[in-house]
Image 1 (spheres, rainbow, N blue to C red):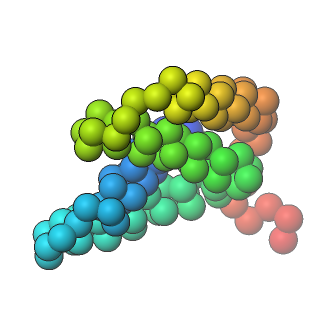
Image 2: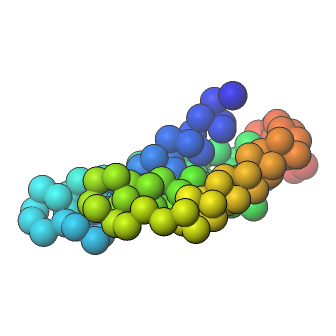
Length: 114
């Protein structure tokens, strides 16, 4: 995995944190952490999108974030674990992995095309 895809995965991790924060934050420090997670998450996604196709970056970012949020809610916050949720998460992750596999990593050169 190259550094651009690592940025997407890291951004998705912080997406999970801020989505959970939006639901569960109730004080100054938890809201501060949520805002910091939003900033890190979008910064990572934007930086990865400069060198990878934006549509694929966004799809992988949202897919991993969604899967991570659903799994976190089940593990940490006691949401019901249902076979249908697990199968749909696996389907979502299959699509995300498929997008990554078929995406060519064309390196954009700064200042090209001017």
